[in-house]
Length: 636
Image (tube, rainbow, N blue to C red; front, side, top):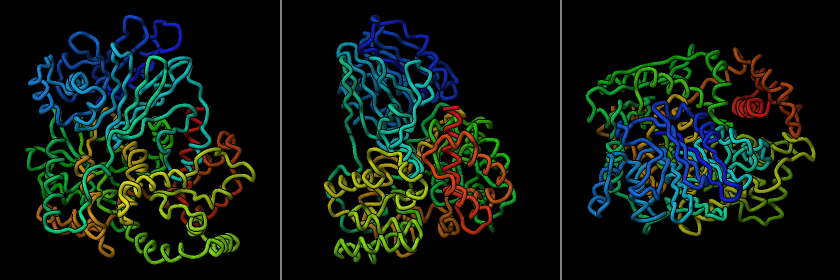
């Protein structure tokens, strides 16, 4: 796991850009504290830079940037290829000569063998940039589910790329400006959907896509995989589906234990992390696990994982570590978090993720397994059950009404100042937009008219609803029989999972030089789980039904029966209590008010309602605090 950066000078006068490339690279030293490397080609058109975190093949032979035998192909790469040993053997049998046992060299030879289609032969998480001297072409790829980010920009006849935005900002030609469309999307989703970022003219490559930059500067972005690929989805379910899920999970965990450095796990005591730990414990004699708790909040408040995590750790003989954090710990960490994120991530779970990653690294672990992705593919969120009921019983009935009646319902809800979320559902109904936008919606469009000053709506292009409509059109075109849970899951896999949950994992693990692996996001497991019908995953209020059946003989029954809790944070109490003064100073600072399209009178009303505990606006306020802190960090 590493940090990558580089420059392709396709149109400017060739100059020696090694110094600026080193500045870009070393801005990400946390991603690779074990070494650094640099390559510039003979005509000074290309510079590739690398920071190394050694995990597979710790020898000098695995240093990057790496080349093939005749120096016509060069690569800088971030990630892990889990099938690298098998690919190594297959490529060697075809005559390729290897100088290391690293997975990096496997990609180089896979490219020689299959060209850009090599990505389809790689099983893992990755972001890499590969320079082909003969074709004069730069190839950049991001893994199927988007576990590893890569950003890019074209400025002054140069194509720039890096693992983090802050590295791109080290190039003198990159200008800092806020993208209004991306900002509007953030205020809906609490993240920015790919290919946009909050920095105007800086983009992120979407998951499962390749980018090719040609010698004339032409950039072509293409998708190489989708969870919608494959044959017909099964219409029925049975014991064979349970067995298939169990087999895929076991294989996903096993392949993610390959490492030349210590491996541990984050453990919450929920079904996902407990399953991972249970299966890891069968193959590890001394498994280290890490959990987070909150000072002053016990299990009765439903914010504390520690009692459940302890029970699982005892059950499987783990060497268990606990970290308890306070409101003040979190307050002090916010500037660091904002810098690590590059752009705001509205999920409050960023706080415990930062601290648990820090604890794991401090205790000598370099690789951890995490539980991300299970809820998206197995229907693990209680809200999904509620939304299925609402969609099937209300939405399908209302959408058959004449449009004039639907419009009247929306305008009536607006006039009566009905809850913004319900009002926005009626707005989407009237506009023939998708019912489901996402799980972590901050400000629905119906509420943004209150959040933004009159006439100051910042967005000029795609709205949040149109972004989601694009995902839904693709799903309905390719899988017209998809049920509503499959629709929700596909929306989550397209946006919130790669650009919020996995971005959160990447940013905070790598900030502490820690590699995080997500077995539930093995692409074979994701494709199969998505294909299964709704009834296999959610039955009434029960979520993740087939997953629980698959691991019933692996986990203690009390863990299987434990209600879904999530990576929660006691923000409602903190923002109305010990962090109230700090939060108010963040929300109404002079720097925040430079974002003058916002109606700070409305923000004040949200704040007062939360401060007096009239309503819980902690999520909305936290997203705004993130946004304002980001703006101060990068534009002060």
